[in-house]
Image 1 (cartoon, rainbow, N blue to C red):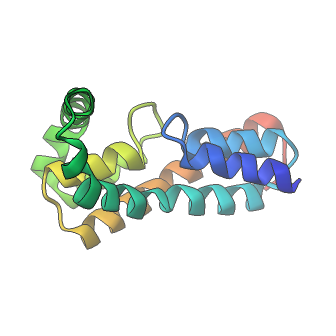
Image 2: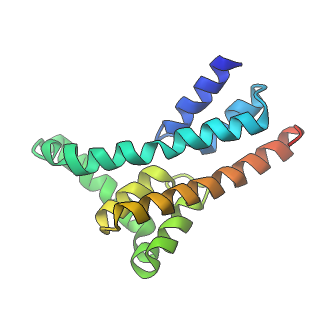
Image 3: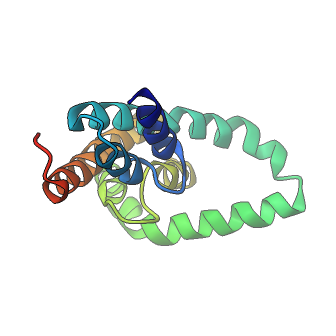
Length: 152
């Protein structure tokens, strides 16, 4: 069971799935749903400080490399397109709702990038991302538990 929790946490910190994949993975592999929710949520929340550090301190050094810069611009355009209107118009609430939607392309990675691009203060961005992640995890958790027949 510990290996399944670790795998679920790795999915939850991965930009390829986040907790939207980690929670179902854990539950469908026999992890208690409450434990799955807790560990996947915490792992997903931990992405924000790492991404924030990367964007504010390391990104500027990597932008000197052409290939990295091309990829960074592409990612920034996608984040602006996905979150732009709502984040600009609604700020904190727009970012929270964007991160909360349990669909591909939304989540803490895109939310952190959007907060960086739209210059949302770090404490507000962290709060919006954390609350958004929580509600996204609840949606995925409930859907997975109901679909798998597990008990809450």
